[in-house]
Structure formats: C-alpha cells, structure tokens
Image (cartoon, rainbow, N blue to C red; front, side):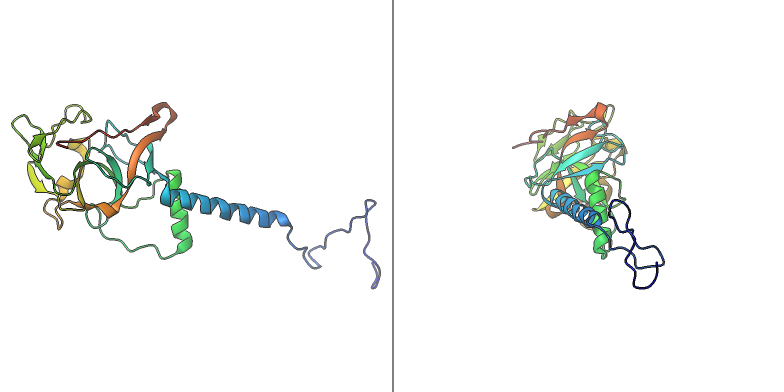
Length: 236
C-alpha cells in the first residue's frame, strides 16, 4: 500500500489489525470484563471469609474420631458465643505456636485468604481443638474414675478416641476470664493446652484468637456430616 492510500478491506468490509510492524490494536472489553469479574469474586470471597464462613483442612489426627486427617471443615465466623464442648479453630500464635510477623504484602495476604477460604493448607498457626474450660472454670484431671472435672463436676466425654484416657498427665488449672482451656479428642496424640502448662500463660488461649466454631465436614463427600455442639461440658 503506498503512502496516502486507504487501508485495504476484505469483502466483508473489515479493516485488518495492525501487524507487529505497526501500532498494536487496543485491548478489547473482554480483558476488562475478566479483571472486573475477578475483583468481584475476590471481594465476595473476602467478605464471606471475614464474616460468614471459612474452610480449613485438618492436618493431624489430634481430633479423631470427630475429625480426621484431610477433612475439610466449615467454620462459622458469625457465632461469637463460645461454650464448653465446642470444637473451634483458633490462631495459636504466642500460645501453641511461635510469634510471627504479620503479612505486609496485601496481594499475598489476599491470596492466602482466598486459599484459606477454599480449604487449602497454608501452614499458618491455626489449630482445631475442643473447648473444655471457659473463663472462671477450674479444670482438673483426673477424679477417682479417671474423668476430667470442671468446677468439681465430672465430665462425660463420648467423643474421646477409643482407648484413650481423659488425660495421661494430671493437671489442675483455673481459666482466666476471657480465655479458654482446649484439648484434642485424641488425647494420646494431641498437642493442646496440657502441652503448654509450663509456658507463659499456661496454655490458655484468649477468646479473641478464636476464628470460629466448626459446624461440619464438607469434604470428602463420603464423610460429609455436621459437627454439633456437644452440650455443656461439666456443670451449667
């Protein structure tokens, strides 16, 4: 095509796109729609994760038989009332896990949030245990029948792993207000509050570190079931 000539057109009247030798064509609306959709989905996921429900992968056998390795559980974040017998996920930083620096990269933090909502293992210091004592409780083990007592009343624990004692280690603790005493259901294979009796804080976890209550298993499909509240453990 000579200088000043009009661009050639095909029989349908379309002007061909510029080649690499010319100016690149402007991106069409498809790319903008993709980015907009991605941002909307990310925002919805972030809101769900922050206020409604989150998914976690069970990494160990410490909660068997209630939860087994590889189970993906749904955690309710809207229910802030923690009771004895609840199975909760919590941030163990400073108690069950070493202190860590908070994420400073907002994109990396968003990616971890999305992965966490989808139930992907992140390696962060999140733990799942059962609440045995709440603020003000005296929790001890064991009575003459080998049972845990809460405020002097024996606790019945039908969720314990078969063959496990209530605890192989004796203890007698008073739970400070605003804190929890937490144990795994598989007592012989659980690192829990008992493992930190000699540490600062004595294995107590602050209420504000609770992420939410486990309400059910959603994967694998053959194991889908709810995780109800065990009822008041010990005296009302």
